[in-house]
Length: 99
Image 1: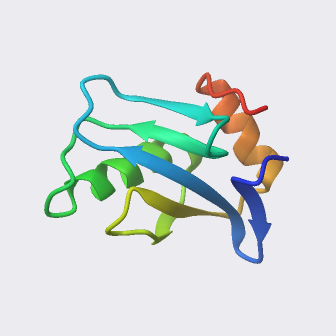
Image 2: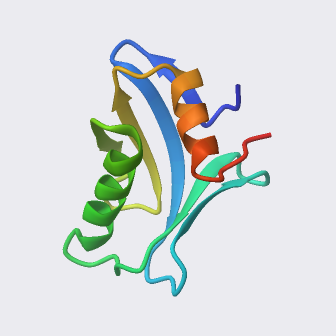
């Protein structure tokens, strides 16, 4: 299992790197940083980018919350009630292949 996806008591933590204001929206795995890279249209102003990220991950995985990095491009998301294997499989279904 990659370092960016790890278990915790409440579920699974995912380390992501966000690129707000992108022309193209997608989710990929960045081998260089070891994080899930998330590109979104919304700008990083007034919480718009965080709201977009939360919605995107909730649509894919269900209950989740940004637990750190609210004002940073590097964030950690908690996916409640899901195992790391579940999370990896859900990302794979979205076309995100993690080494």
